[in-house]
Length: 177
Image (cartoon, rainbow, N blue to C red):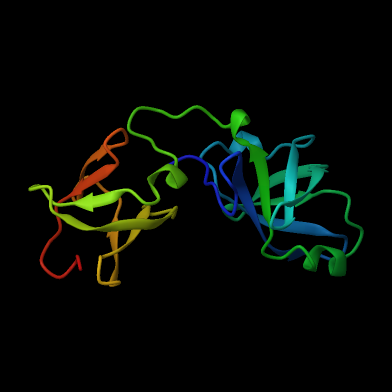
């Protein structure tokens, strides 16, 4: 996976989520939601999602790796101002997205795809794809509303057919709906 589209109609991609303030001078700890860490450099411009369809352009004044995340500053002067941004997303226009490699997919493009077994029987529909450090996770719901998850690894995910709108999986007993 590369960059994740969150709470957006499809024209913006979330590249980071503000976790918490750091220190007393307005610095922030940001969780990267992209495999392209060059996104977080001093001078990078992004949109801060303040609410649905409410964005403010920000420029990263400083940005550096910090304990598996990024320590950034963007003009805030104190901890209280930084704390007000906790949980908000940093977005970029989709046209600025890092190019995808072979076998990579945008998580938002997989939402509502059918999860099917090798015989083509629909097991459920994708409701979300969670991007995690260890492995990505497909969250799906069956026709009767049972939610289940499938690790996005080759052991379980056999084929992704973007044109056909299906993800073929091979699940052990008890993993599916």
